[in-house]
Length: 195
Image 1 (cartoon, one colour):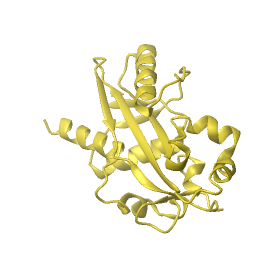
Image 2 (cartoon, rainbow, N blue to C red; image 1 turned 45 degrees about the vertical axis):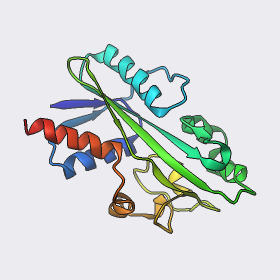
Image 3 (tube, rainbow, N blue to C red; image 1 turned 30 degrees about the horizontal axis):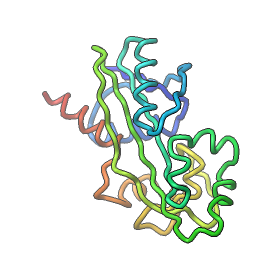
Image 4 (cartoon, rainbow, N blue to C red; image 1 turned 180 degrees about the vertical axis):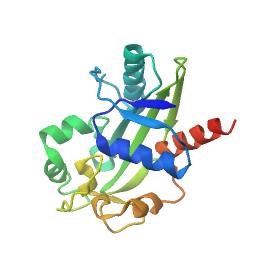
């Protein structure tokens, strides 16, 4: 089976392959950046749904789209689903400057995967929020295959290091009770394969 992952982000593809392998799901994941209109929406789920439908209409093949949001409590949930334009304009340095003077540095990642199967049926996988705090300063370490520069400033709950300084296993096990969207998708695929 082939799945087209409509993304230009190789870190997301690496993460998906890692989770599928952990669940012994044998599918070919093809990374394919597509020209999709990025809708204005309040949640990552809404954006992922619109983009997945656009991608499916272009290809009429099993398609997967991921969209994530990053919510900073002190900034009333900003930037939310607007991570990419935020990073392209002010970067992580700008985020740290916006956080100056705030004692509450809590934040959370929320990701939604939308899979549209060969019949055009939509399946949504929302993860449990990945909670943590915004560091006081950015790490100089950049991890190969990281999804975003936010990995240099986000400290997961239960950890004392930013994501960029954690191994994949540490990252996966730091909040063992949390189930992310990629794991939910891999488990669903595993269950489908066993039927």
